[in-house]
Image (cartoon, rainbow, N blue to C red; front, side, top):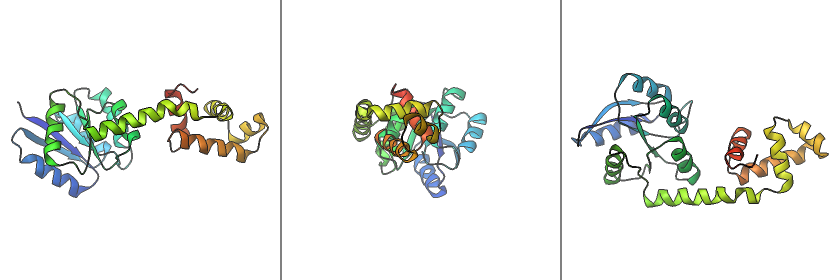
Length: 209
């Protein structure tokens, strides 16, 4: 197997240094760069040949999952393995949809990390049983999400996606602004999103609007 060129992207310097030290002990791997932000990563990708990027999700500025999606268009030959503390199905599913080849929790041991790198370097995806179960569980929840929305919530959702304000929706449906906000909060909980932009994006993906 030819030497796999790696980059480590994480906003914690000690973690990056630890990963570089660990990976450098393997003669089949070469760490050719590291970055503490998405901007630094793209600068690195523009000037260095990299096969695999080990990528954290929580980054200053743009998050790691957005970076993977952008990189897929600009640097299609680069493969990403997410290495994060986030052990939630929604992150796994989003990572996969954005083009990640693997997903590991930071408590993974060295053997599993090296196994993931090897599999991904061969063009295979790598998700262990725990991660696969998280992904399947979240996709099942997504599949049921539309059943959980009431008719009135679906109506409010449609108006939100049309760009109407809370006040405009309240006037159109002859309800109070507080009622509209309650519907909005309930929908965000049901679809497991954090804000209105994510709500609309998720609803569109689930074909609710």
